[in-house]
Length: 359
Image 1: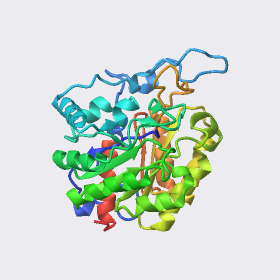
Image 2 (image 1 turned 60 degrees about the horizontal axis):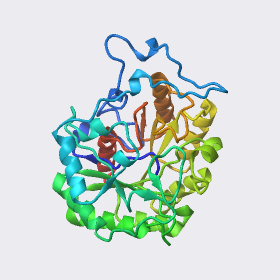
Image 3 (image 1 turned 45 degrees about the vertical axis):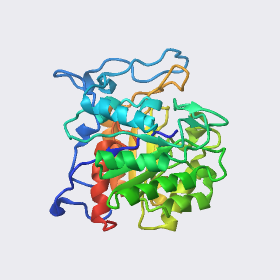
C-alpha cells in the first residue's frame, strides 16, 4: 500500500479573515512543529546529533534511528476506544498494517483534541509487493466485504468527524481494481453525513481512466494518489506494476476530468535520491496540476524491507517545504514524520476546501 493514512479530523475551521486565498500557501493552523514531532529531548537539537545519517556503499548494517524519529508507546482512552470500535465493525487500519510511527499520537489523546485513524478499504491483503510497505501481499485476496461501505459510514458517523481520508490496498485481481467499492463507501459517507469532507487516497487502477472517473464522480472532495519516490528509484521502491509516469497520468486525469477538484500526492525521502531528482519530481507534480504535497521520511518497517539509505534532517525537510511553496503548491507539508494523510494536514486542507467554495 502507498505511504498512507486515512485520517479522521474534527478540528474547528479558521475565521474567514484568516482563511487561504486561492492557490496560496496556508499561513494559519498547526505549525511545522506539529508535523516534526519526536524531537531531541532537553536543550539539544537535531544538529547536535553525532550519529551516522547516511549508509555508504558496502554498509550492511541498518542506520541507527535518530532521536527526532523516536515515538512514544501508544496510550490513552482514545487509542483503546478507537481500536475497539474498529474491531467491532471488522474494519482494517493502515495505521497498524503499515506500522505507522504516528499511531500513538494520532489514536491517543493529543493536544489538538483530534482523533485520527486510517481505515484501509477492501481488506488487509494487497496484490502488490512494494519494497517499502509492510501490508501483506497476496495474489488472491479474500472477496470484498459488501457491508464494508455501510460499516465505514457507521463508524465515522459515530465518531462525529468532519474530514475523512479513505485509502485501500491494491486489488489487481478485480476487474475495476475495486473502484466501484471505493466509490460506494464515499456515497454511503455522504448519505450518512452530507456535510462531511472526504479525501480518497487511491491506487493507480493500472492507469484505467474509467476507474479514475468512477472515483471522481463519487462525490469526494480531495483526490489523492501517491507518487511515492523519484522516477529513477521507482523500479527499486515500488511494485513493477506501479510506474512513475502512470502515477502522474492518474493525477493529471483526475484534474482534467474535474478541474476544480483538489488533488494531492506524497513523496518519501531516504531511498538515496538526489536533490535535483526531488526538485524535478516536485516540478512534474505541479505540471500535472497537483494542489497539495507532503514529504516524509521513509522508515524501514521490518528487516525484510528496503533499508533506509539516509535519514533526512528536519532542516532539509523545511527546505523542501519552502521549495514547494515557491513552486505554487497550495499546501506543502514536509517533515520527518509527515505521512501522506496526517491529522494536522487535514486541518489545513479542510479550510482550503471551504474557502474554495466547494462546500
